[in-house]
Amino acid sequence: MPRSDALPIAILSTRKDGIEKVRQRLQRPTFDPLAMAEVEGKVRDILSAVRQQGDEALVAIERQVGWKGCTKERLKVSDDELDKAERQVPAKVLDALRLAHQRLENFHRRQLPSSWFVNDEGALLGQLVQPIERVGIYVPGGLAAYPSTVLHVAVPAKVAGVKELYLATPPDEQGRIPPVVLAAARLCGVQAVFRVGGAHAIAAFAFGTETIPKVDKIAGPGGVYPVVAKRLLYGVVGIDLLPGPSEVAVIADDTAPAEWVAMELLAQAEHGPDSVAVLFTPSAKLLDDVAEILRRRLLRSPRRRYLEPALRHHGALVLTRHLQEAIELANDGAFEHVALMIAEPMAWVGKLKHAGAIFLGATTSVAFGDYLAGPSHVLPTAGTARFASGLSVHDFLRRTSLVMLSSEQAAQLAEAAATLADAEGLPAHAKALRARKKRKATGD
Image (cartoon, rainbow, N blue to C red):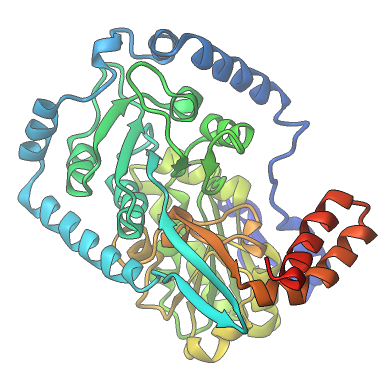
């Protein structure tokens, strides 16, 4: 095995150190309320400012964070700018966006649930499924442009039937938004795009300002400030997920091309210095080969300044005793993405219990999921795949229960329900129930 100090990534082995020690080394930080106290304090100040001052606060904060020429009039992207942006995007890119849109739409249409009703001995029971009316989409900026995120949030929302979609994304220091992001917004039927990022964008959607409408739910990934803002505003407005830095766990055997394995790790690590990239393999040769390829590719990568800290602080190459142990460690981590780069992935997929999304076979790069495979790439991170799911049509639907009892059914159920009300010490409930029983008895 290569020395761990020979390249910026940890080399671990369950054969040498035991699975418990490796498990401890792989533990990832989650949102620690104590560690986040300083950020949370700043975010609370931002939320309060936007709630009280509206657009005035948005302009002041944008000027502080870099867009010195921000004005209230420029917060909203004009229709002319959207038209111009679409013309600036190369035809090949527009075609790729349309293909991604089509594939995402086809996938999410299969998720649509239906309203249902059943007659149960005089009781009409059912569930009414309706779309949320107004959604705010947050699209991050900074390290890269993310038109894919526009599609991966807007398409499931549109398929669900959301009528009003609005988008906020941070501009550059001149107030510009990448044309490809604006083109994606237009393709998805977004009503308006706003040049606002960070916690103040989340606050604007939650409270509404003179320019930005108040929405019913906010969806989309972001950095630490938007995520903390979403967490604090849950209950004021609907929230999708609290996604953190990108993660990938590659489970590979000796049939996986080492070049492809290394590329999978680098592809997710290049999202930023906090990204997580881990390989689990029972093949010592594959691990050695991947380590050498990583070293070589890092030297010539244009995004080395992001890759190196990600691999150094959040990456690992783990030699396991067997494939089952690799699966077990991946389950412990509950990673955002799990790539099963093994000979018979379908034979093992059922053993993966905790994952945001699973990619089967060496030919299925996680990057396909980032762009146009079909499911949304907004996925649970930081171990939350144990209890959370990726963004879907269901996140943009409300389910309302329906109950209608005939007089006969009401009279039949009244005494049992009233007995439970008595047991809970709620006499008004009991009287309301027994009134239905008496009415039936008297024929009223």
